[in-house]
Image 1: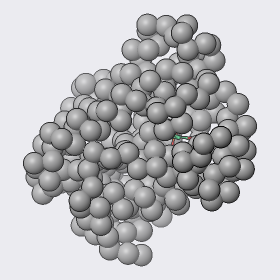
Image 2: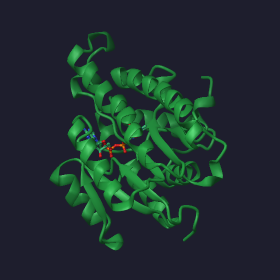
Image 3: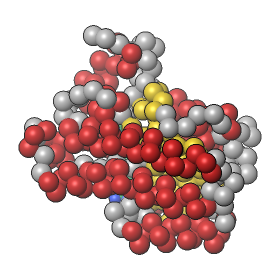
Image 4: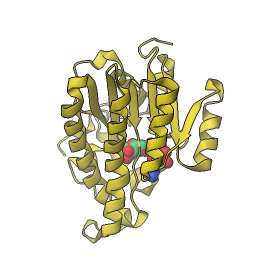
Length: 257
Ligand SMILES: NC(=O)c1ccc[n+]([C@@H]2O[C@H](COP(=O)([O-])OP(=O)(O)OC[C@H]3O[C@@H](n4cnc5c(N)ncnc54)[C@H](O)[C@@H]3O)[C@@H](O)[C@H]2O)c1
C-alpha cells in the first residue's frame, strides 16, 4: 500500500472484466489509497464489477452508456452530490462495429465511422467537460490509445486507428484549455494486451507474438505496467506533464523494422 492517491476521488470508466485495462488501473490506484468510483455498461458488466471488487465492497458504481448524454449528465450530477469534488478520471472506452474491423478500411460505412468516433472519441470530450466542473482542486484526466493504429498503420485496426488519432488530438486540445485550472490531460498509448475489445482485431495473437519478439523489453506489457503508468499520471508525481501521449509498450514503437 502506498499513499500517492490518498484522499483522491477517481472515476474509472471501462471495467468490463478482469482483463480490462481499466481494471488494472483501478487496482493500482486502489493500492495507492484512491477512493474509486466506477461506471458500467449494462447489468452483465455490473455483475462482473461486483465480483471483481468483492474485497473493496461496498463500491460506488453508476450505469453509463457514453453514447447517451442523459447518462453522462446523471453520472456527474450523482458524483457532484456525493463528493462535490473529483480529482481523477480514467476513460478506457472504445467501440467499433465488428464489420468495420474485418472489411477493408476504405469500405468503412458512414454509420460505423460515426459510431466509432462517437463512442471512442466524443465520449472522452463529453466526460472531460463534465469532469472539469468538479475538478475544483485541479485534476488529472487520462485516456487510452494505441500508437500502432493512430500514428502508424496496423492492417485491420482501420476506423479505430483514425479514432485514436482524433483521440490523441483531443487530448492536446483539452489539455491546452484546462491547463489554467491545473487540470492535466494525457493519454497512455498501450502496447497490445489481450482484452475483450482486442479480440475484435484481426490476427491479434500474431501482433502479440511480433511485439514479444521485437520490443526492446522482449515481452508484451501487463496490466501492472499500465496500472503503474496510470498512477504516475493520476498522482502529483506527473505534476508538470500534460497534453502528452505516453507510450507503455515495452519500447516497441521505437523499432524501425
Ligand atoms: N487491448 C489493447 O490491446 C489496447 C491497446 C491500446 C489501447 N487500448 C484501449 O484501451 C481501452 C480499454 O479497452 P480494453 O482493451 O481494456 O477492452 P475492454 O473490452 O476490457 O474495455 C472496453 C470498455 O469499453 C466499454 N464501452 C464500449 N462501448 C461503451 C459505451 N457505449 N458506453 C460505455 N462504455 C462502453 C465496454 O463496456 C468496456 O468496459 C480502449 O480505449 C482501447 O481502445 C486497448
